[in-house]
Structures are given as C-alpha cells and as structure tokens.
Length: 168
Picture (tube, rainbow, N blue to C red):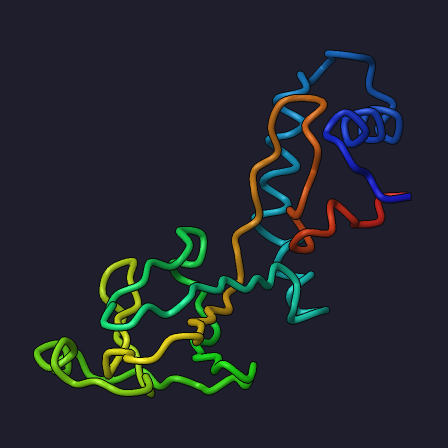
C-alpha cells in the first residue's frame, strides 16, 4: 500500500525497525534520514529503472515580441527538452544557439527555432511574432524534502501522483 503522508511513513519506519515513539530518533531525524535516501541512492535507482521518474513539463504561452521566459527553479540543472508547440499542438524541437545571437535576439523575428539559456530564463530565437503557440520545457524536478509529520507526500516521486514507493 502506498504511503500518502509523513505520519504514515514515520509509523511504518518505527514499526519495521521496532522503535518506540520518539526514541532513539525523533520524527525530524527519521525524516532527515529518509531525505538523505531520496536525494541519493533511491532517486538514482528510480531514474535508472524508469527514465520518466521526476519528469515534469512546464508550459508557457508565447507572447508576440516577448523574448525571455522564466523556467521553474527546480529545473535549473535538469533541463531535458525545450520545445515550441504550434497552434495545432505539434511539438517542434528548439536547438540551443550560440550566445552571440543575444545581440540580434530582439531584432530577428519569426517562429522560434532556437533558444539561449540566460540565467534562469530561456530566450527565444528569433523573437516570436505569432499567437497561439506555447513554450514547453521538459525537465527532471528535484525530489522535495520531507517535512513535519502529517504532511501529504504529493509528487515527491512521481510528478503529481503522490508518494508511491513500495515500502511494504
């Protein structure tokens, strides 16, 4: 049965390890141990078993004449694909272009075919001129830290699906 809250995780850990409440480890210490496992070997193993683990998609509507778009903070080092989705819903891969294009990014216009990473922003090249298109950023999000007892575990392992790792 999948665990849905940190309370359930703590109860299961204490029962399996035959630990009395609060001894020898506090709830915060047990959750810190779990965080260490999630951030290290467990997440690596899960990604090896299923490449889509922690996969997420972030869509932003392209605005005519807008060059730069922010991407989610938890995608900073794990970008997988940057795409343009046209009005018909077809995805078009965007290629990363040289930063020297920044000089012309605001003057060249047309359907975007490339992007430039600029800090925590994606700069489209050339500048979009049409409406009804979307910037789609596919990335692997980082697992969230477990926190206070009773917190719902929503999406830590499978984006949007809840904590669903068999601990039974």
